[in-house]
Image (cartoon, rainbow, N blue to C red; front, top):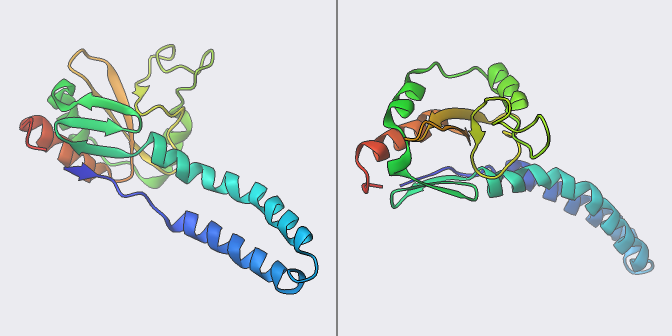
Length: 175
């Protein structure tokens, strides 16, 4: 079994700053002006929610798991038996990109449901998981299925993911 851990530092920092901020505001206003404090708390939520949008989307669309012979990426389920082992080994042999290359790659890996942004129209690998793009800073791995369809999977730990996928494709049913 393989499961990528989701980072929680950004979410914890954002929520911590929000709680510290509303606590500081409430220190002097709660007994007398609770309506003002509630209004400001709601106003600061408008700032907090977009800051938590990226971690939430990573959890929904780019969570990677391999278990029970199924590769789960976001909302998609791909049987490990459908993954081409040769493409996994080719991805393992390719050089690991440096952070600047990861950033550039994530900016160009768009698969949005709009004209000229679909991966199929650009002859690029289809992004797996249901998201519209690879989140900034995440690495992406291009593999293919046995039908030859190129797939792009966003991952946080390229080496561990490819090793687990290689083991799963070599021995189906083991994971």
